[in-house]
Image 1 (cartoon, rainbow, N blue to C red):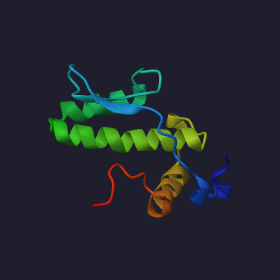
Image 2: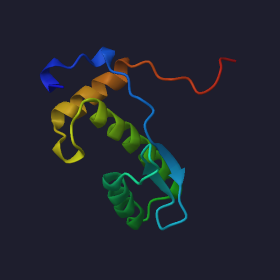
Image 3: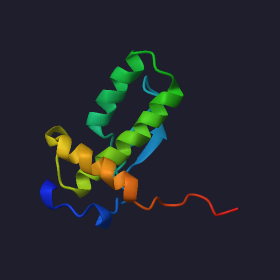
Image 4: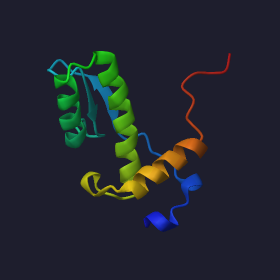
Length: 106
C-alpha cells in the first residue's frame, strides 16, 4: 500500500499477536499469532528494561509497540523500512479510528 494513497479511515487493525508476561529478564513481551516472540520489539524492550524502567512502563510500551507492529503489517511495510510517512499515517489513524470496546457501557 502506497503511503501517498492510504485511506486512513478504512484501515482496521486485525487483532494479531498479544502482549504477555514472561519469566525472563523482560517482564512483558509481544508474541505473534504463532506464539513466537516479535524480535524487533523484544530487542527494544531488552534495552528499555536495561535502562531500569519499571515493569508497568515495559507493559505499556509493549502494547504500544504491538499496535505499531500491527499497523506496519496492515500497510505492508517491514519494521526496518518504516518512514515518517508510516508514523504520520499511524498518528492520523489513531485520531479517527474506532477503538474496539473491552467492556460494556455502564
